[in-house]
Image 1 (cartoon, rainbow, N blue to C red):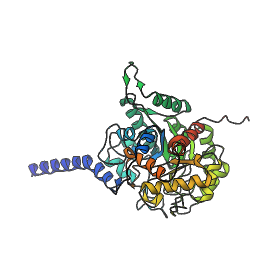
Image 2: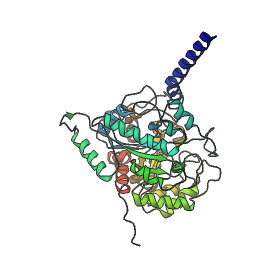
Image 3: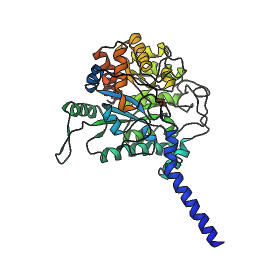
Image 4: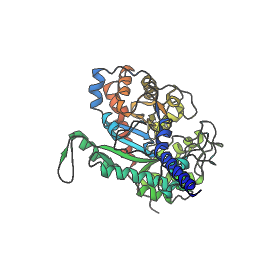
Length: 404
């Protein structure tokens, strides 16, 4: 009997080890997909132009997953080698801390959470298992650790001067280590964002902890209503609450950019009315080309533009009603034609439980699609990153609080 128990225990240990080793990869392979459909033929013009672009992507969920960001992965959509191959200058990495079971675009409550199981399966620190705030702080820690290990290849971005230094280094085409060794790869910047302020755990003062950890952008809601506002995918879909108005004001004063992605229409309207800084819609689409509830109406696009912000267009089917590069370009063209090229940006939602046509290493597909849609070279420069740089530089400067 004793040998049997020992054998059973050993078998359970092996099974548990296999689960924790294999489960994260299995889960992600079934979640973050590339559909394998035909890609565009990339012209010499597109290849040459793409190499000269300063590319900014406003939203990726890559920090959610258990893999080494510095190594090229065989799953998912993004990592540092693929960012370098795609010529991305600055990537905004979002912290996703909670998602409801049966997640859908129409109506979700915040009573359940599937991220907890993922945190445990990925053997994240125990402190993250029951705390949304700690999950975000862990994501920040992951980024900073990766940046340190990368040498000079990955740079955390948290201030206007960081952007300026990054762009200077990329314009030179080399960077230098502390020991003075020259490396050939220009650095890639990474800035932290938040997907839903439920990670404040009801305490607005936790925003200070997140700011100290490097977070510089935040969406108010994700897939469910919270104490700050209604979600487009929530049950009540209300506007900003009094606490929500307070958190928006505090974000603007601190130098944190307000993101309206996933907000209900009432929430978007309330934010646009009170905004003193450029507002972004980090990832999504437009209802004119893809009538999905989370996409922006023309009035909302005009409202974002009126703040001096940008609309980040995603690459997955619910954002553009297809995964083709042409559909991405069509949505970007609508924003350009409606309010002007200066308000167009990229917001991939890579690694965000999405299925796409191409990963970040093949971003030249978007450049080619924009050329084929009739965009000029200067318009492509603006849409692929120039506009986002303008908004980030403006939004990261703290406001001076009014005199009492």
